[in-house]
Length: 91
Image (cartoon, rainbow, N blue to C red; front, side, top):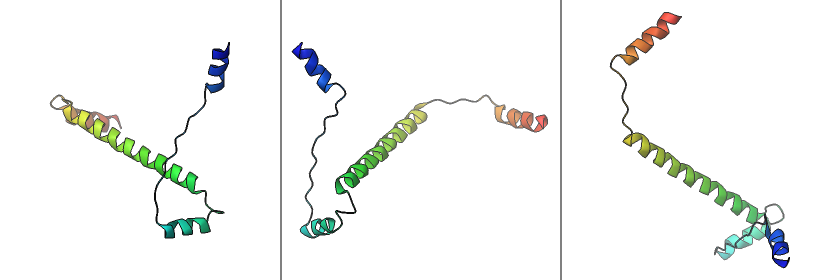
């Protein structure tokens, strides 16, 4: 009984980690000046998420490009000319 209640309590929960950075005192003071207008934690979170998406997109692009380079493409001789001719004749 206790195990099932415990599992129900934690099902679907998102666990978070703390990420810290060191910044210069002057920068921290400027951040404090605007803390009523800027949620710095949210800004940093959004930046990291955006940067991760960019890096993943780069990796996907490189993977796809590599796969395309390894692929052996073949088009029958005369295919392009026939296709263009068919298209012109159909109009």
